[in-house]
Image 1 (cartoon, rainbow, N blue to C red):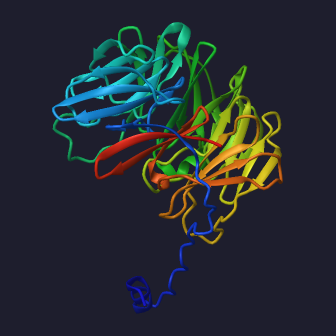
Image 2 (tube, helix red, strand yellow):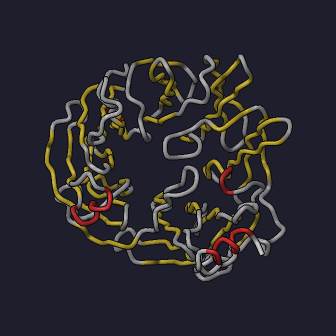
Image 3 (cartoon, rainbow, N blue to C red):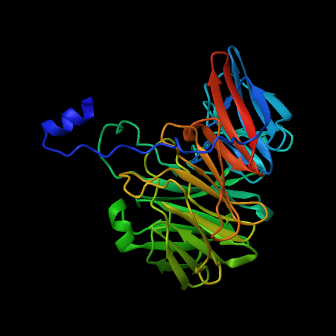
Length: 397
């Protein structure tokens, strides 16, 4: 009898059911299309690696030399390489066509297309990618407000701030500080939308709701506001319609940005608040909304929220005490692509096509924790062995 079972019996508890594994997974594997050695993941806020517009950022670290390296996510070919002082593995926040590298001397803005440094400024460290008003060259992100000098060990409400930055020179334009439990930001049609919880207590947000502010990007002036009985963790705009957005939190709600009217609401997946750097599990891309629940993937109609296609996930453990970690993406050509935690076994990839049809299934070379991104039809993984680390790309079916 194992130690865990003996401990459970000693305290009068029933032994926990065994955790299912993916031993029944098929032998097929995703096909590797490129591999680059000597690179490590470059931490991105609320994601495992920074990828945008087909460019993947990685960190080359061979003391005393270091460099920020950009790769083509489809081919693995280097696009540029920028030497940088050795400062560990700083995080990155993306803002439009810039990568904001969080360094000890401040934030350095790097052009994603060319690797050219634009500016370095003393700014707060952003907790997520910045929403950008592209025409005005303004980015707005969330920062944690540091403790006042000399009061680091005293209790006081934890403050967060929405901070606007001029992306041409890095100058801070305005900030709005709050002790709210959270906030979400979006930009549409030259307006910044900021959803702020009406309470500092996270467990009360669902009951007390949020206030959504429409702000002028360069001044932070409030243009209008509306209440919302919802608890969004992020906001995704409707494709081609700057007047509506999805507010995603405990539910998925389609909301008018002019008056806060909710046209439909559907349950969202359970939040992944355990494990390393979890992914958001609701994806809106190319006009399609797919949601990964515990044992099912669904595509929702953006107009009504109704389920228009659904697929059961094989080997889903409905009795698991923790949610199964997974990331869901709309698949090229229709359907959905899902990468699923396989409980210390190689991760599993599912390609769903027609509703109700059996999925194509393959294993991924690494554990789920080392799947860095799924972009442009490529699954990016990080692998470590006795000779060092490699970043590799696998064709998503």
